Structures are given as structure tokens and as C-alpha cells.
Length: 124
Image 1 (cartoon, rainbow, N blue to C red):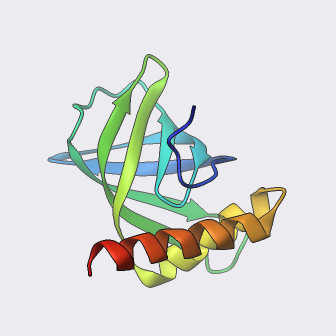
Image 2: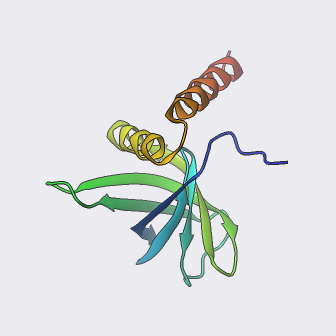
């Protein structure tokens, strides 16, 4: 049984990862409102903080979607990240990416609403 609260969508675009004193690129395999999986040969440690930038091409000007996150999963194929901080513009772009690439865009809005409700209730 999956413990995911947000739907994942296949999304093939390059991402730039900044970690400590280095920077590298990889290919995004899938994306959700709270994380992503990156195909890469780079070696990272679980729990390591990173800054992630995805550039959406095909628009003028190009749109950069920025996240701060941590490494949460490491496989032979790549690395999974959980987003910890997302600015409002990037969050809106991310929401639109997910909604556009999922069969049921309303489901994305329900997931976001449910997550906000959970967070609000846990802070009471």
C-alpha cells in the first residue's frame, strides 16, 4: 500500500541540483507536489539538503521553478527528493504542471486542499 498523499506524474525535463560546493544536472523522471525522482549517477547522501531548479522551456521568457529539499531515497537509477521550501510562484507552476499532466486535474486540487487541512489541524 502506498503512503503517498500526492499523485505523481511522469515529467521529463532537466533539473539542476546544487548541493554543498557542487552543482550537477539530471533528468526528472516523475514529479509530485511534494517531491521528485531524478535520474542521475551522482552520489548523494540521504538527508542531504539541496537546491533544485527546473527550467520550463517553450515559453518566453523561460520559467524557472525552484525548490529547497532533501535527499529521501537513493537507488541505482537515481535520487528521490522531498521538497521542503517552495516559493509561491514555483508552487503555482508546480501545481499547473501536475494538473496538466494528470488524467484527473480535480484530484490534484483535492489533494492540495486535504494537505492544507491536515497541516492546519496539526498546528492547532
